[in-house]
Length: 216
Image (tube, rainbow, N blue to C red; front, side):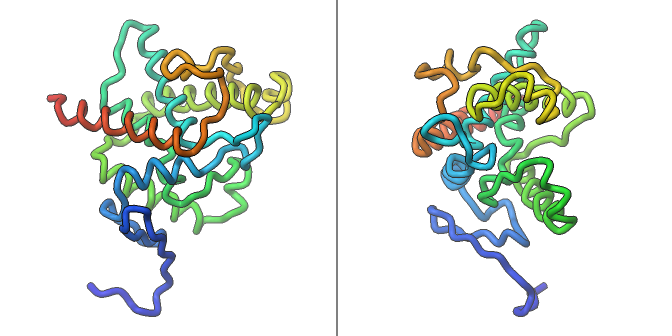
């Protein structure tokens, strides 16, 4: 059915040349490099940082995935490639939107913003064949996300461990070690330049996609 020409649209032209209507997204409106670059140019903590550069959502997404993988390994299990891909893409809609809203502000943006985010999230899950979260899986994911956030708050945003709990109300203990340092080297907790964040995110996305495709 043709759309009403007077119906509002919010077009975004992707670097690949594809175009995405944020109000009516489909899984075919971006390619992987578009998503990687969008996440690398979208910043956490309101764009504020104690470092010269802010922290990208791309780097955060890799951190959460590695925290989740380490938690599985500690119990003698291996996180399946599709589950790891879901961790990597848990904030993918923010890269398409170009905006990572600070969590306490989201209720003030209203139901419309929530619906928009849900539509983008659904398009991501459909494009990459991600299974829905079970309650147990989602709880494990949220713990990994909170652990990453607590570590970022201290080591990147500049909050004290006490402020993380009392002011930010993040109950998870801040990580002391940067989960990405053992993988990529460099200075622990230092935010990466956008081009590097996009490159590393895209490489992991392509690796996990290939593994997921080959998993029975």
